[in-house]
Length: 219
Image (cartoon, rainbow, N blue to C red; front, side, top):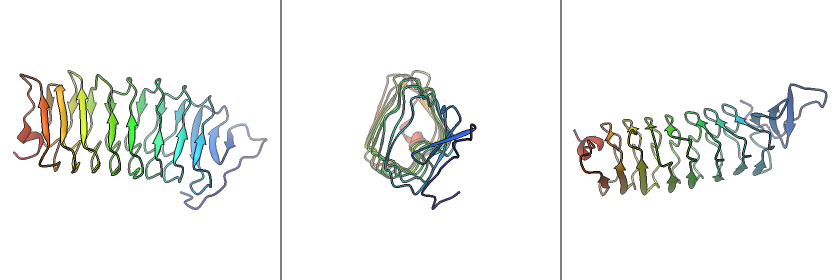
C-alpha cells in the first residue's frame, strides 16, 4: 500500500490504464483499480462507463462521498474498507458486494441496498459504529457471519425473505439494537444476535423456528 500517496497519474500514451482525479481505472474505464489515499478531493464522481469497483479500490482512502454510475454491477472485497466514506447511493443494477466491502467505515451513517443484493457477505459492515439505518431488500437469502458486527449505533433492523438464513454472530455486538423484525423469515442460527442490547424486542411470525434465547447466544 502507498498510504501517503496524494497524486496518481498515468502517461497519456498508456492504453492499459487511465487516471482521472487521482483514481486509477482500466483502459476502457469499466473498472476502478485503486485511488490515491491522501488526495485532497473528498467527493468523487465515477465515469458513467464503470461497471466494477475492484477489490480494495478505495480502501483506506479519505474520500467521503462517491457517486456511482447506473452501470455499476459489482463491488469487490474490501472496496471501501476503512475509508472516510460518509454516504453512498448504490445503483439499482448492483448484483454483488464482496466480503468486508465497507469494513470499518466509521463515518457511514445510513445505507440502502438495492433489490438484487440478497446475500450479505461476511464482515460487510463490520465495525461501522456510526451506522444507524440500513434498508434491506424485500427478499433476503443470507446474512453471513459478522456482517454487522460492532454496528453499535444500529437501533432497528427489518429482515424479510422466507428462505433467508441469518448466520451465527451476524449481528454480534450491536449494543443498541432493540427493534428486530424477523416476521418474514423462518430461522436464524444460534448466536446470530450475540451480545446485542438486553432490551432487544423480537418480532417473529407464528410458527417460526426462531428461538430468542438461542439467537442471543444464551444456550
